[in-house]
Amino acid sequence: MEKRTRTRFAPSPTGPLHMGGVRTALYAYLFAKQKGGDFLLRIEDTDQNRFVPGAEEYIIEALHWCGIKIDEGVSAGGKFSPYRQSERKEMYRKYAEQLVESGHAYYAFDASAELDTARKLAEAAGKTFSYDSSSRMNMKNSLSLPKNETSRLISENTPHVIRLNVPVNEEIRFTDLVRGEVVFHSNLVDDKVLLKSDGMPTYHLAHIVDDVLMEITHAIRGEEWLPSAPAHILIYDFLGWKEQMPHYAHLPLLLKPDGNGKLSKRDGDRLGFPVFPLEWKDPATGEISSGYRERGYYPEAFVNMLAFLGWNPGTEQEIFSMDELIRNFSFHHVHKAGARFDPEKTKWFNQQYLHKKSDEELAKEFLPVVERELNSPQSAVCSPQFVQRICGLVKEKATFVSEFWNLSSYLFIAPSEYEQDVITKKWNENSSKFFNGFIENLQALTGFTRDDIDKTIKQTAADTGIKPGEIMQLLRVLISGRGSGVDLLGMMALLGHDEVCSRLERGLLNVKEKVQ
Ligand code: GLU
Image 1 (cartoon, rainbow, N blue to C red):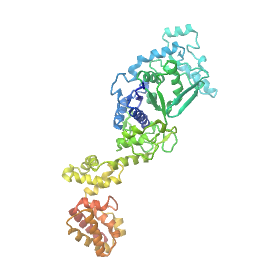
Image 2: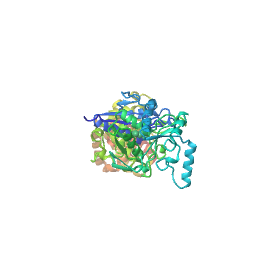
Image 3: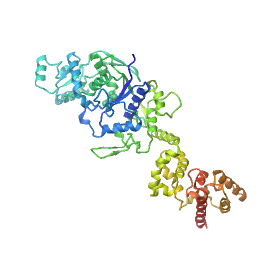
Image 4: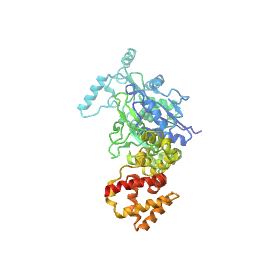
């Protein structure tokens, strides 16, 4: 029987979740949901020194904002509880001891001063120290020491770690879902620490024990773990867990926009865009790093953009809902090369999602801004339909709802100043002639649709012998104060007959005073 697909996202709570981490979670989620399986959240907090308060809550909130639903894990519970590694501490030792017993791991008693000396010696010889098959017999461990010495050190509770005993001269192979067949030579693999002197497992041991106990079928993680993969393959093998070993997928790195190097947490806002999904306040320094949510991005746009950082559907389609991503995602279309982050494309995605929203939805977002700016409840100023129609007019010009006010304030508040450059450049005697006639014609109108207005402009132009092109920008300035903006006829129809006439009269007075 085919195993139920189970993927996990296993972040360490060392700070806010970087967008690369969100992408890892997203791919793991898409794959699990496509297969009708489960997506787990496991918190890997075995490195107590790097623990940051609030990070776990941040991770959960970020996934929630993105629409990534946790089936099982720290926030959701489940039959393999607990899902926080620090709470599973007691489970790991026995596997480390089992490896020692079978000769696949060993106790190492080297104090940090001794390791430092080894490092310095290597450096002096122009090498980098590696605790591995070439150096282990010169170190203080149960392979290099006589048996009774090891027993004595253990019985005296001498601080020690357990290290993996990597075999010499072997090829270690596995098939990666992204990279295909991968081969490593064991002589280049170091004897990784599996259990630390504080009794906590390292990531290398803990994630394997947990992936097996939690019945994970696909371990999807960042490329930075690829060099450690051979050690992991060996551990599975040595524990007799070849059958249970999940398929590994190592996802490509996220690169800075110029392609030079990894986009890291430290980049913060330095490059002019956020690297975190949500805003983060560093609990130690109080420093704030911005987030996509607070910048006004839609989670759907953020997720769509992230999905494309390393994957493509193999077609021209770029806009994908979460359900479409679930249906279309495939590791065959995840590329091996690093994915360059493009902040402009990210804005483009938001724009596409904004344009797809109905005027009604946008009005809900925009109303609080209107009320704040006008300093009064919207109902006291205008109808909800008025705000909706404004949204319809401005959305084509915007990427974020936060831009709506600047794009439309003149629709709520009649202008008191008029863009002088346009007037200086365009106003002439013909203009006066046209506008005098135009106001008269407008006043006589009974309907006030775009069409009515359009006809009136054309009629007045014909009557006065002036080309409409000559006066359109002036008309805009007289009504809105600005030389450019939303669709002119739409704006006039929205403001309505009385408001347009009164704005025109005021505008004309103002202009005439200035041009005389
Ligand atoms: N705790 C590891 C990390 O944050 C998890 C890697 C994995 O998914 O196995 O990178």
